[in-house]
Image 1 (cartoon, rainbow, N blue to C red):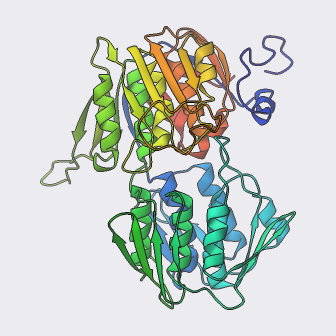
Image 2 (cartoon, rainbow, N blue to C red):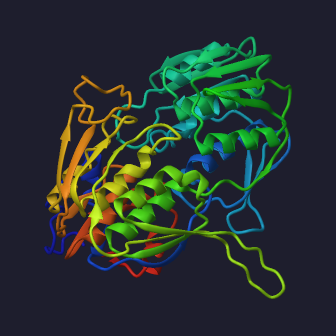
Amino acid sequence: MRGSGEHRGPHHQHGSTDALEVALTDDVLIVHGGTPLEGRIRVRGAKNLVSKAMVAALLGDSPSRLFDVPKIRDVEVVRGLLGLHGVKVSDGEEDGELVFDPANVESASTDQINVHAGSSRIPILFCGPLLHRLGHAFIPDLGGCHIGPRPIDFHLQALREFGATVDKRPEGLHLSAPNGLRGTKFALPYPSVGATEQVLLTAVMAEGVTELRNAAVEPEIIDLICVLQKMGAIIKVHTDRVIEIQGVPKLHGYTHRPIPDRIEAASWAAAALATRGHVEVLGAQQADMMTFLNIFRSVGGEYEVTDLRPPRHGDPGQEGGIRFWHPGGELKSVALETDVHPGFMTDWQQPLVVALTQARGLSIVHETVYEQRLGYTEALNSMGANIQVYRDCLGGTPCRFGRRNFKHSAVIAGPSKLHAADLVIPDLRAGFSHLIAALAAEGTSRVYGVDLINRGYEDFEAKLADLGAHVERP
């Protein structure tokens, strides 16, 4: 592609400097829009659980088995980090099955670990397990999506409460636990998912009892608690976001099939709505998506839950999932606010906003979880959308960002006719939103940086092909 003289790069250069550098590579997908997505795809285990369950395998004194693991970049990063620390990771007999043998956990060199610096935020969760197994840990500089600062202060404060010593050096963080780790009482300033995971993975083998207040209670957190309980942990989930963990001296391996990825399921649902299509998402579960389903129906989308039916007496059965479709006619505007579970998930709003550009009237989105998550709307406006972002809190949910100069509310006026454009993906969820917009728009778009989508969406190009999308690599 480069040097052909046919294309000199993106006309609409939205995204960070890093993303613009990506735009000059061949990491691009050509999308011929205007065709409704029609067909069936399947989602595997939740990205936000699978990687944490992989880390939990470090705590066991016997092998663990994890099923339905998606082939995504975050899984490869964690697999590499586990291997560096002596955990033997192998493929099981079933497609998507991984087996973890932690019998020979060892220290990894700083240089080896730094190979993964900036590629994922998962390494911070290795702290507790490594402190239990080795007495020390090294964590490189952390990466992740550019959707606003996600400081690790909550993590480090919690680790210090357990008795860890944290030494900040230019190459990263060196942690030690000279006197072991002890249970503690700890209250999070905000129900952070990552910090809650940190406390769980550290407290299960810390001496004594840990009480965590204002904990995150997302379905992926509850599933991680299920994993740890299978390993021998004693964890009580009380009302009012209180989790109590009684430390045990040792844990064993687990066998676990994770909950399906509710973010990916909602992303395909939004794609069906935006393209006026019909997509069945096998594996999607109603219980974990209730808040999304309410909004989806309020906008004018339709869905049907298809329950699991085991094979019997010659009946092949069915896997079960949710069918999502655009029923025709106009979509309706809505007002929504993102929030921690059981609220409307922040990772759901970006794909859905693309569909809201096609709804009649003014839709309002108040983002209360990440302060810089609305930057992707610039690209949508370049395609013909009419989206204004504001510093004000356009909603009643208590928000940490009011009067702090962050543009964290959006007003979407519609319906808007979207046209093709050249787009640069700034982060994972915005990337899928850009892809949906390109699929819904008239004409041919070039979407740069699409390999970033592989961080959280397994084999998305093949799934697009299964749904009849007209996409190609140059």
